[in-house]
Length: 201
Image (cartoon, rainbow, N blue to C red; front, top):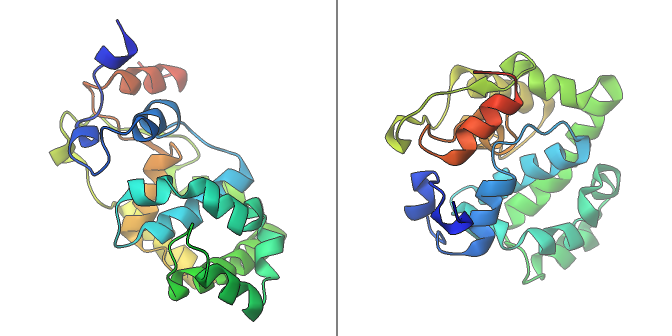
C-alpha cells in the first residue's frame, strides 16, 4: 500500500493543519512511540504546556525555533536564564511570545533539575502508567479521553514539584505523544505496529 493510502487516525482530518506533511510525519514517526530519552521527555513536557489554548500544529511548526531559542532544551541552561533572557524570548517571533509560558519554561526547568537530582526522571514519569505503555483499543476519536486518572495523578505530582502549565489535559497529551499510552485508533495502521512493538497481541 502506498504511504499516502495508509489509514490514519481521524484527528489528522479534523485538527488544524491536517494536510501538512509535517503533521502527517509527526503522526507516523513520533506520536505514540514510547520515549525514554530524558531530554526529549523534558522537551515534550514543555512544548505540551506551550500548546495550552492553541492547536498542536502551531507548536509543532515552531519546534525547531523553540530548540534554538531554549538551548536545545538543556534544562541546566534554561534554569539559569535571567530576566534578560526572558525579554529576549518575548521578542523572538519564532516562538509563542506568551510571557507566562516563557517564565514557566524556566521555572519548570528548575523543577525538572530538582527532580533529576533526587531520582531517575524518566522512571518517575513512566511510573504513572506502571512503567509500560497502556495499549488502548479506541475505535473512534470520540472515545479517546482528554484526561484519565493517570494524567490526574501526574498533573497533581508535577504541581507539587512546582511545574506550571502541566494540568491533567496537558499531561494526557504528553502521555499520548511520548507513547505512555497508545491512543492511535484501532483502524490506524500505527496502532497495530505499536502494539506489536510492545509485545502485545
